[in-house]
Image 1 (tube, helix red, strand yellow):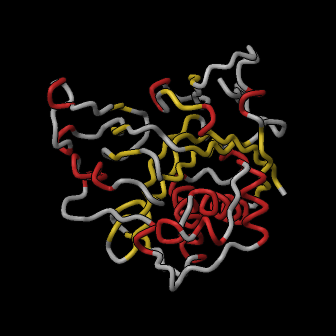
Image 2: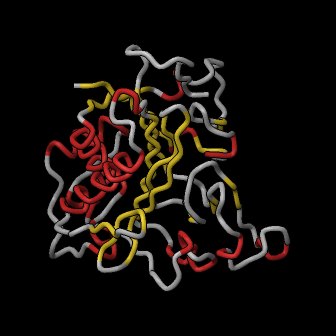
Image 3: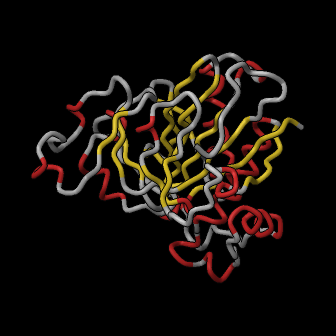
Length: 272
């Protein structure tokens, strides 16, 4: 494990935010229907190399993969607000604020979770909580290959498209990253976020979006983010393996599958 929450929540326990890009994987919620898969997960010939995992989150099937900014906050809601609806709306607010930084108007829908732009879903949210300690979280489509969603009914919602930030933001509406964004991106993962390299792929890149997510997460939840060295905080074995099993506290092992260690960012959160 990269970290472990105390069994009994206390003022000394820390909130944690895991930020990562998944290898390609389809995930099912704890009660989601296989009817929303357009392939047979029990038939190896139908899988065609697809990986499918059932998790403990709520919600229907979705896809995770490269090009998504995925955030898994592990928050003790005993010290925030013991209301999962409030918590979900706070996560949506983080994404809405990030979109606003690009001049986009993110929207909520009464009947569905997540964040939408022009009727298309740009961010999915799936949650779980045990003793008011949260797991799972949000996935914001930055520049993924959207063809992966063609094999499913995303989130079980028929006839509704998914979209991505790089298609929503044109160069005419994009602005260069601020000095603060550049500094924060470098602080998290060494990303060199400059106007020149951000101009690729419709001027949206993972480093600058990740930086904005962190800034808005701090503002929405009133927390301060401190970067944690995942390798040093892991099992302490000192091995050089690129892959490790990393599981949030109170979650089933299949939650995250196997992750590339260098694609994971663990962020420790402290109250302001």
